[in-house]
Image 1 (tube, one colour):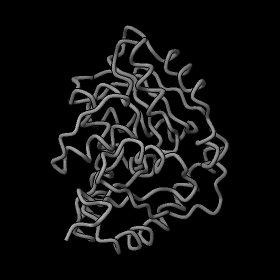
Image 2 (cartoon, rainbow, N blue to C red; image 1 turned 135 degrees about the vertical axis):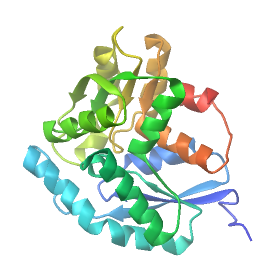
Image 3 (cartoon, rainbow, N blue to C red; image 1 turned 135 degrees about the horizontal axis):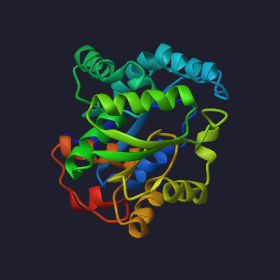
Amino acid sequence: MPDAAGYRAKWGVIIPSTSTAVEHDFNLIAPHGITIHAGRSMIHRPAMRTDDEAISVLDQMDESREEAIRQVMTIRPDHLIIAMSAEIIRNGAAGAEKFVRDIEDRHRIAVTTGPTACVAALRELGCRRVAVLTPYQPVSDAKVVDYLKEVGVEVARIHGLRCESATAIAAVPAARIARAFRELDGDDVDAILQVGTNLSTVTAAAASEVWLGKPVLSMNAVTMWQALRRNGFTDTFGGFGTLLREH
């Protein structure tokens, strides 16, 4: 029998323990009848003021991710989303593929991730050259550029907000995000891409598309789009950008 609340689908979502944006964004976008259930990968030391601290945050999530998955699997989800980004791409495109494959094989469930969703979205829209916004330090920004290059996407420029902690990412105001999108834009890019799941940009990105006249892709919105399409849901709706409205 279907779940009373998630009568269309129950999705497990693995997020950093410091995240407050992912559940908000996913619940904002999810069509009625699709429910979101989070497992949290523990971060004891959230500071990321330096490259070394940023790497430590990734290491902490790697150590605790499996327990978060085991917990969320007890709801018997129909699909699993890993709402993380820097730790998935830290070993390049091949490492990201292995990351997904290992979880799918171990838990026998299909997995969607933010980085793979972004690649699918850019291909769907025919975008080959992008500008990128992240909350990261330089070490992670470099990994973003390398990953996108490996999958055939050129990065014209990247702007890292250099957030001081994993928790502080969620405190970046919408006005600052909108200003960053404007500063990143140019005639030399097909789209603007935001990376980092605790940076809530779903509404700012959709609004920015109106006055920039090109796709502005929020990682959380893009991830929900791919999860919907991979599971056979064809819902389209406004308010979250071109991709969810027209594709």
